[in-house]
Length: 113
Image 1 (cartoon, one colour):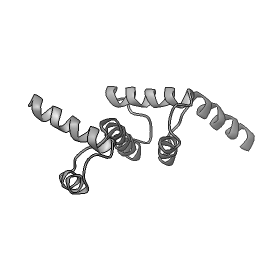
Image 2 (cartoon, rainbow, N blue to C red; image 1 turned 180 degrees about the vertical axis):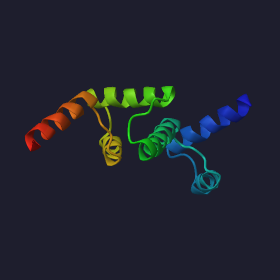
Image 3 (cartoon, one colour; image 1 turned 60 degrees about the vertical axis):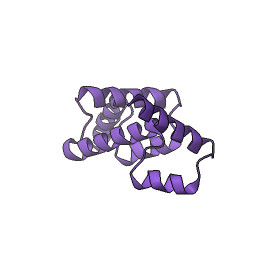
Image 4 (cartoon, rainbow, N blue to C red; image 1 turned 90 degrees about the horizontal axis):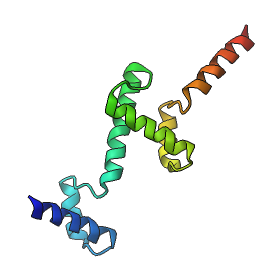
């Protein structure tokens, strides 16, 4: 098992350095090989959040997904979230600052009154 883990890491390293031939890349792609674990994990969490929001319409109360959401908010505040990821979060109606969002909603209601 340890040797398999090392082998997988080596394939990722070779791929990132451009040292893996196209046949091997195609073979690994054909079995759904994950080239970037961090990117894959982000996408998995995003998909979970997207499904949760579509069903429930608000932020999750699930502990691990909630922690991920909090981390995205922190990264956004620090301007450390990529524009692609920010755009994807915005595309599902993600609310970056719930307090600001609520204040604006009440203010808009007051103005409409």
